Structure formats: C-alpha cells, structure tokens
Length: 208
Image 1 (cartoon, rainbow, N blue to C red):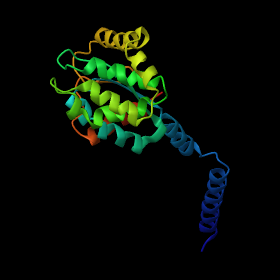
Image 2: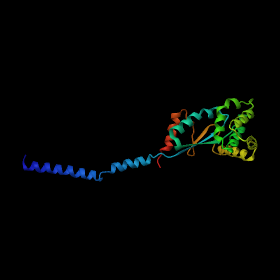
Image 3: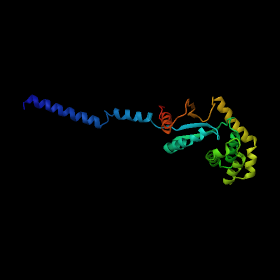
C-alpha cells in the first residue's frame, strides 16, 4: 500500500469515528425528537359521548351492547352520558324517565336504568301496566317507596326530564338514539361496534 492510499484510509477511519461520536452525543438525534413529537400529537384524549335516548325505543336498547364494549375497550377514556328524550309515539316513555330520575334521588339510577332496558318489552307496550312494573323494579332495588312515589310526581323530576328533551330539540335531535361525540352530532349512527370504535378513535387521537 503506497503512502497516498494510507492517507486516504486514515481519513476514512477518522470520518467514521467522528460521525459515530457525534451520533452518540445526540447531534443527530433529531429523528428521535421527531418521533416524540409525533407521539405527543397522537396522545389519547378523553372522549365524551352524549346519548339522547328513550327507554321505550328498541333501537336505543340495541346500542347498549356497543356502548358497553366501548367502555370495556377504552375504560375511563370514554365517558357516556345519557340524556332523556322521551318520544310522543311511546305511551310510557316519559314516565319511565321519571322513574329513572326518582331512582337517582336514592342513588340507584344505574340499576334502574339497566332494569328499564332489560325488561323493555314487558312494560313498554301501550296496553302494558307500566306502573306495576316500575313499582316492582323499585321494590327490587329496595327503594323507599314513599319517596319514590313522591319523586315521580315532583316538579324537580318533571322539569329535569323536560329540560333535557328541550335541550335535544334545540340541538336538532328528532329521533333516538342520537349521539354527540365531544359536542359534534353524528349524522348517521354507527352500524357496528367496529364502526363506532373507529369514530371514537378519530376523536380520541385527533391533533391537539
């Protein structure tokens, strides 16, 4: 190997060593920071789902499993809030909403909410004795029956249900269920859990 070749070889070795030192020292660490910035942009944000619903509505009941699956999938990152929107086409819807709120006053809203949907086909038909079923539910939940009956007729419960219905009307709700995600109304309800999940993820991972 001649002298010139040795010099070239030495220069190449020096350059390799210098570049390695700079890389390990973080000079060329921009790719990592870029990755971190991307991850920051993709940080999950809590999603709020507002559901205007009617306890007599079969479609509302059909969406319950999807909502439960969303909670199982995302846990506390998804908050699902129910809004009363009793429809005039169902005979017992408004009373059912009053029943749920009367149970809430005794700390049993979720339990009553679940019973109303579970036994929807029994109490919701027009000819059904809905009140018999509702008092039976209240007894199952060991509610104070005097308070329960009084709350059913109270102005507080009546106004709360009506205020939520009027709120829905102002937000152009015309049918149930109607979903709002982070304040944005879904123009079309998802047709499957996977579709619902994809919509939620779009809001969960939207750019800050």
